[in-house]
Length: 439
Ligand code: NAD
Ligand code: G6P
Ligand code: MN
Image (cartoon, rainbow, N blue to C red; front, side, top):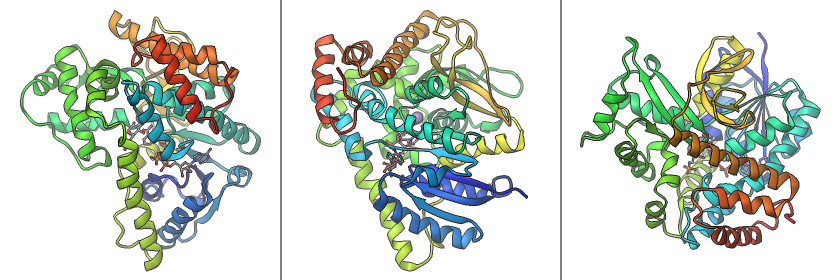
């Protein structure tokens, strides 16, 4: 049986143990010959590597492990690349979130000016990765989780149209699982229709196996006092509950469709700013909880010489990326949400816009499903957001201050060109060591 060489870029990420556990659980279709943890932070990935080495020893002893900061070593002979890099790390995420809040603007990892700053750090890093994939493993499949996903997909698809890649996000599947649990249904039996951009979309229908649309039932549920049925997942910890609860507010205001949770940052900006402490944001909580816990657990297991009793296990996030690899390897269609160049899928948007829609993945890649004409409200929001995304890519690639300012001015979270300029100058200062120079 063929065995595969799989590399994880961002191998030192907090999500690595979950993803590797999911890969090992899928060893019937994705048996590994070699696993590579690639990272820019040698110390961080060495600790993670110590944990993964024990995990492999106990669960898959024939798999070779390589922990490296060298892309040539990591990519030569590679079949799959799972990318989950965070350019600048969590400390820079904290600044992405805090600087906008000081200007009274939403401070978020992927939305608004924070997502913009993250994009300008990440685009050069992702393109450098792509250049080396093209050089050392041009036939590899690249499955990407790195954020901000739509902007990275745009830069990537324009530069590397020939590479086999899928840009995915776990938010739609997490929301769909929540919907299914809340309606007392099995997710696999429901057919969802979703359209939008990454972290910026809507479900318009939820069909049951008899062809009945369950959206009205979901609407009635969300508008009542009945609880949402949550399930065991990283995403359903206390920090995320208000976000899921706010789906009720979105539904009340815009009852024709179920909104992606991330739209809260674009539609309820003042409320989101009001809830935040500009000195302690989600990045700080992640550093004080998930990051500390994951790395403490890695060190504990390394000291104990075993992962046998570890709480670091597979979950929705790891299983979801592995399901895409499984579909590619087995040619069994997997219905999913993907971020792909529009090319006629959504009328009224540019052909090269990266849209997030349902599609099915097989050995031949993704076949995305088009949707009919959109109402003015969604189309206009998407056109504006897409223009912001494309201008962000152009600003990074051309080193253009003018385009960066246009991008931020167009972002719905930013109230004026004056605020956009003040923000751009502060973000530029904070990102001097990371951004391409802007002139
Ligand atoms: P993390 O900071 O724990 O890990 C990221 C790792 O990437 C770090 O070890 C860092 O050193 C490394 N890195 C940074 N730049 C790199 C580069 N150029 N090459 C290789 N490695 C590099 O972050 P995390 O919270 O585990 O998240 C990882 C990434 O996955 C982030 O981009 C996050 O936004 C994304 N993410 C996406 C989804 C999704 O559904 N789309 C879900 C969760 C996380
Ligand atoms: C969801 C989104 C990701 C995002 C993550 C943030 O999974 O789809 O794009 O990176 O949430 O989670 P965190 O726990 O790091 O705030
Ligand atoms: Mn996402």
